[in-house]
Length: 83
Image (cartoon, rainbow, N blue to C red; front, side, top):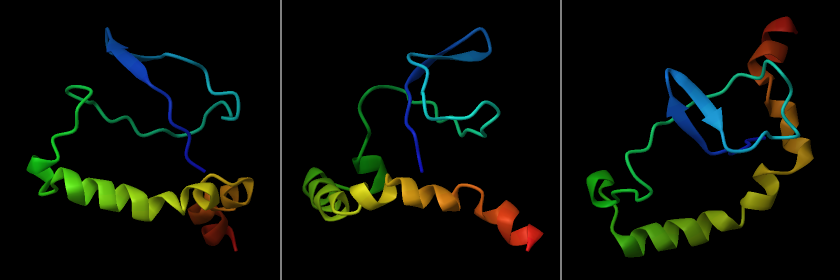
């Protein structure tokens, strides 16, 4: 399961705007630095209409991706190696 939390980079550290309640201490994270609040779709080869179609077509999967049952895949590689 993915959890999204916004933060600010200051003095070599990321300060979270809020503390997620469902994330265990020591959980690995991936940090992506954003240059602004806007995503430059054109630089990704996507126009606004394509982005809207993509968002609409993926919206149906949101409930599945965020369901508690999907957390089984959080440590998939570790489990796979140990079996």
